[in-house]
Length: 60
Image (cartoon, rainbow, N blue to C red):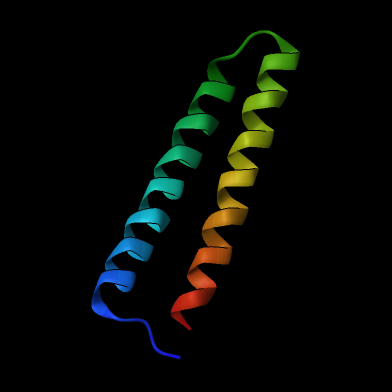
């Protein structure tokens, strides 16, 4: 079933938001000194990337 305009707009917004979050979290991880916090940011960044890929699958 094809997406309507509003759904497509919302999906694009969500994809962009997850991409931005992943980039910021990776940057925070790079700046972190504490290994546990660094790992937390890295895991969160990976989660955001995974979610972005899942959302992008709806565009296919």
